[in-house]
Length: 252
Image (tube, rainbow, N blue to C red; front, side, top):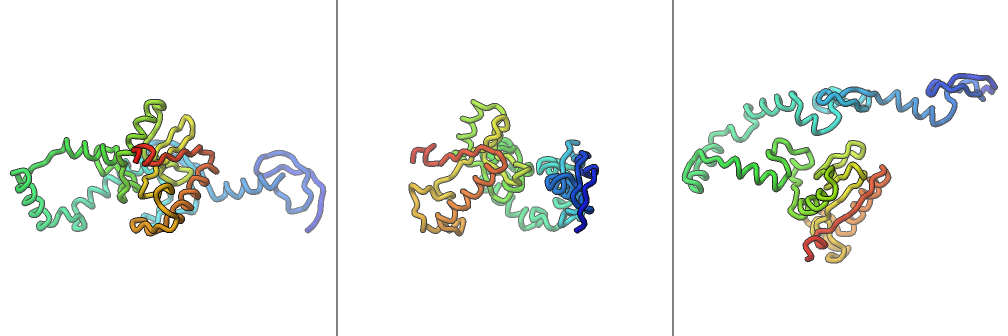
């Protein structure tokens, strides 16, 4: 590599520096890495809310073949494309509710339970959705929740207590930089609170490390390691993480 000793302008930061080799283009490794990032990432405006966010230039959605259009899952769920897709699905043969045998079975059940085959209690439906998911309708659920994740009673109890002290606290919040959904998030403190269920996280005070959880298909020790990795990952991103156990809340 040819050596030199000449003054140049850094292509990334624009600062003048002394180049030691002929091929030098940047004043430091930091500028070189930042330049590489700028080649792979770009800043664009969210189609939904107009907020600016960063996306990978060459990353395409595996189904649509388009680059990322929205800054978050919430914006994507509220998009016209999503509504149109749900409308088309609702009218398609893939929707099991369009099958005559399903409709007949539903009417029969309503007739037996409520005495009216066209019975609909929307108030109860909304109340149940709010209790389970903290959303009035299941159509508004995020991906993590729609895969079966519910807001448990102990989860909601912890949230209600925290909300009294921190009005900005959010339940089941999606962290964009971590690409993870957390139980409770307090933006003003950048604090994450995870509510661990006794069974679903195998409380060490009640389960041995060799216990095999059939629902999760992992041993208790494997689950503890998984949870530890998750906590450390969030802490590395600058979040303060607090773990609350279900047994400490219920006293069981």
